[in-house]
Image 1 (cartoon, rainbow, N blue to C red):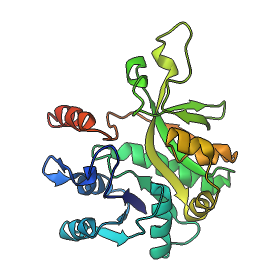
Image 2 (cartoon, helix red, strand yellow):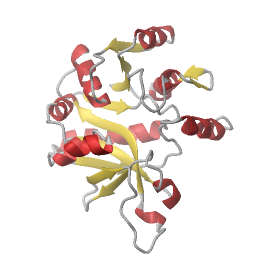
Image 3 (cartoon, one colour):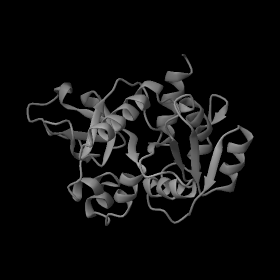
Image 4 (cartoon, rainbow, N blue to C red):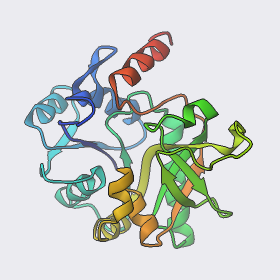
Length: 242
């Protein structure tokens, strides 16, 4: 099951999930972009989004407006949908209208592998190599990896700091796609909040703070999350030509 958290209000870009992306509202285009991979449900706090989903033949569930994170929202949706503990849930952000199927499939495959091998991993996410210039942008989150390709830290800052400067091979750009089982999702959401997640405004740091493991998959992708008007303008320039 792919669940797309879709909170209507955004502090940086008002109603961004409803912005037109090549003829469709952003959240609808995102859902259709991944609908060939698995069943898709939009988890929202907006009747307008519920109505939009119905209009476009997509499933949507109403969730609380009080959630602090998208992960908490999809956890509520999983309960509404009565999913089983070992069901796989993929969290695709509603502001990823150009995410490639191959990227999401890579996360799905890794979660399946973890289930089969009974690995001690809480969640799966993914990253791609990014340029030094892109790594300067705080809207593009960076991730550090350990020797087992698990995440050591995520930051909006440019990490690692390269004293000799500009070695592009060092920078891993995080893509906000997450894979869980229903059980591991619920475990994550029952962890206490971490100070670092509120400082960086990155909810995945809750797992790092509590010493849980996040397995990272390297992918190839041209997509990026749309957090600002500038991101939207750049995305439309890039993808409208394809």
